[in-house]
Length: 430
Ligand code: PLP
Image (cartoon, rainbow, N blue to C red; front, side, top):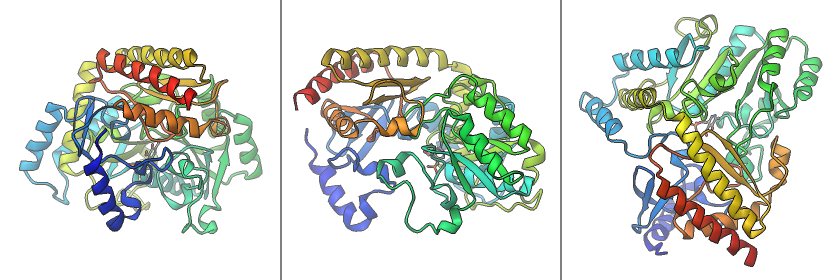
């Protein structure tokens, strides 16, 4: 495959941008080789700077559930753009998108828009602390909630990929109020509540984890955490930046029937533009400035182009209801991948949640971060490279989810499974 232009761009980027990229996992460090520079994207396909075309299973890390450059989304953004790109004052689109989010997610009575998932989580945690008057939070090993200092503790995603679960530059004092439990292990949460009675402001988790690869909650786990939070008068925060409008229109909380106090959103609600949001019970959200004393602000929050992209994306999703079909199609794709691995004698676990999936290079089911860390990440890297050679662009890390869009076709899936059959055979040989 020709990579001349991507290579030249990466060389230049390395001189100007730390590591040559603006977000670590894009650098392909975990899988070897150099990143491709993308020139354009349409539907299920990415085109790189050398005009190679790939079937894309990254989908900009989640937002592109409708596929890239959906004509209606582009039109809505174009119309908004012609009216001005940013006002720094309220606009109607914010009210409309807030209305749609509130209708879609029953636990959300009020919502605040920000510009990224990281900001959304920071806002939600601050609101929870402000509301409860407590300091500590519980997170789960392997869950990623953005790059706020106090959440870079046992974070999954890029932090896991780079083997540095904690970041340099974060003083240990900043993470002292963050306690870490094991996903799918209620006892590990109870122990922390017992150790710090009356001190826990909130429990935050990805209800279905995407950031250590796809990991589903055990039966009853989310319900049990909900009950524990009720008993301890701590707030429950579902980080649905990835799963919101992805697993169902109402997110993972609709699928599992559990109501958090606060929810964070991002990715899909921005339709590919930079957006995050946090929302929940009105009495908690009314703590947020200027309604209440919890300060949070943003120059580009509620940006009209981003609101337009998000609103149009939600309108299309609401009308098309693609979730069942997507789940079925991705189920068939996952079966194809399992069979291909089995035929080649490669032990894998293929995990699926709706239109998200991960090929874990370990057998026996993956229930938590410790299980995920057992995976043969080197073998995954070989598989990734073999798939990329065959024009299939997977998430470049063992500890990430792949995303499928409504624009992926049966032909895409056939080609993907065929590529996987060859890739699994290849990694056995080498
Ligand atoms: N929360 C979750 C669950 C995420 O997956 C991410 C990003 O992948 C974030 C928060 C942070 O979002 P952003 O990258 O927009 O800051």
